Image (cartoon, rainbow, N blue to C red; front, top):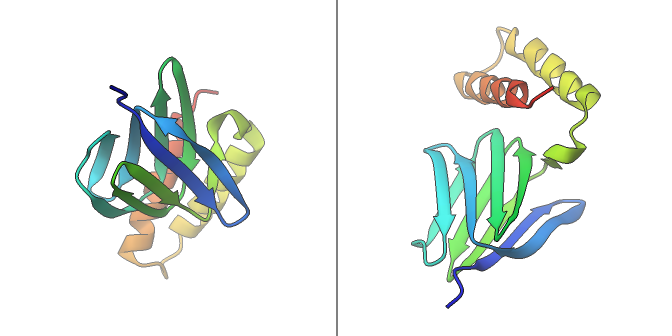
Length: 130
C-alpha cells in the first residue's frame, strides 16, 4: 500500500509543485510540523522557513516567507505569496532579502509579530549554505 499523499504548493503566479509526497515538513507558527499520509485534518499558518518535500529518493526544499496550509483526506495544499525553490535562491536574491528584512527590523515602528517574522526570515536565509 502506498504511503504517499497529494501535494500542491501554489503561489499567485504559478503552481510551484504538484506531485505526490511521502513526507512534507513545514515551518508552522506552532513549530516544525511533519505531514505524513493519514495525518489528522489541519489548517495552519506558515512562518518564514523551509518546506521540505520527500518522495522516494527525491527531496526538494523551498523557502517560504508566509502562507497557509490545509491538509484533509490526504491532500496537502500550501498557499503562499512567495515560494522559492532553494536551488533558485541565488546569493544575490538571498542577500537582498536579508538586507531588506534587516532594514525593516531596525525600524521602531513595526509590531512584535512583524519583528518575529522578520527574525525568522533572516535566520532561515542565513542557514542556506554559501
